[in-house]
Length: 120
Image (cartoon, rainbow, N blue to C red):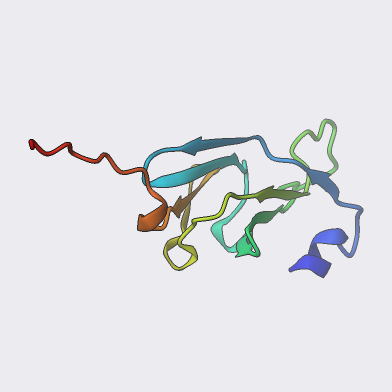
């Protein structure tokens, strides 16, 4: 998908940094990205070497000559260095209503743990 994202056959594509929120809980990191107008098939999520990479493509919906075109074809790209301790095999992603949510679970050994104090 990398080479496809750089240029369309008929037009230059603009690269867009999607707006992203990143959350941390005891169990996971959660990445939420706005990808308006992007189909599920046009999204790629990669996790390698501690880096989360999001890539997506929005196609133009133009049916005629544009007079004002704020939602033209675009490529979305973001990358994040993630902390150690992510269970890469359990990463999940979903796209709903133009919002991509990526769940990056923590390895159980890296999660905070409360230790009970036993009576003596």
